[in-house]
Length: 106
Image 1 (cartoon, rainbow, N blue to C red):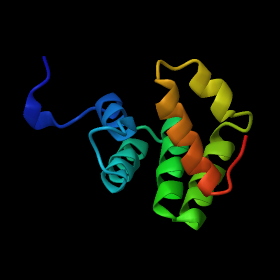
Image 2: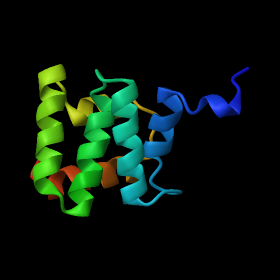
Image 3: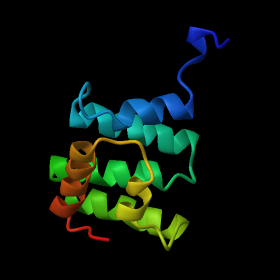
């Protein structure tokens, strides 16, 4: 059993960061950045962070994060990846909307 003083794992931070119900977009972005530090090779977290940044209107940063994602996984497809995940359709649409706001399309 993990001691609570040890802090959150990369998975826990990722789960918190992708929760669009309980957290503000700014908080989600901060948690997603923390998860990228913990799990530097993550494409999934970068996709969600790029979306959050798109929602926040930080288009340049969203595009920079997306560029990092594509360097890690050149064949990455948001639609393909999220179709395999257990997210509600409205959550996937919200994430897609953030990517669209940043001018990022599959």
